[in-house]
Length: 254
Ligand code: NAP
Image (spheres, rainbow, N blue to C red):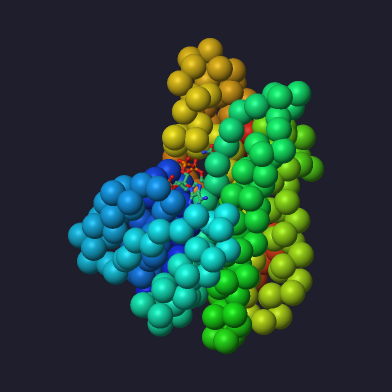
């Protein structure tokens, strides 16, 4: 079960953190993986080397997902190198703590352009390839702080709005793309141990308060999210589409 043998995957923001975890897990299941990065070429190249060491195929590909032209070039490069694209993990994202009173239009735009518009650009670019094949998998990274479940993250109005937009985008696109053979789902992680959560997790008092809300009693690991991504990318998840999968160590239940 859960084999991705021969599948061609593009993972955005895969130079580190959750994206790296997803890229490695996809490769371990047999997929060819395009490792997207924005700035950290050396780290992306390390992920590629790690995949090659385990006998897999991978390429690093630079693109800022908030720039349509760069996304279009990335997707056409990956599709021509791999001979198509079966799986898109829309993972690239940023966070920038700012109280709402000090939040400027530029702050809002930067976060929305990366976290939401970036996913739109990537889906726009890959969907035609998937439609032509009559199958595909799109996995969008949201967050538990995306509305509807009673979790907001302080000083992150733009981030929470972007992640709520990802949920809405996922549900709507499932209606349009599922009949064409493309399943669209979202993963909503809780607190995962990456660079993104460092600001919070490096403060012992804050971390203690956070973990008090997590029945598992620990931060999540990129591998915890990657396991869900592998499932959603696999043939076994054929009947899953338009859904949000919360992977949060029990946070929402507490
Ligand atoms: P991270 O450790 O900060 O890594 C972010 C990744 O995104 C890096 O590979 C970075 O590339 C890339 N990236 C950022 N902006 C980009 C852009 N404009 N174009 C292309 N790539 C870009 O973050 P993470 O914790 O792994 O988060 C991954 C996803 O999970 C995000 O969507 C995040 O919102 C979501 N998430 C995370 C948590 C958490 O607790 N960590 C919780 C819920 C949801 P470079 O290295 O080149 O800069």
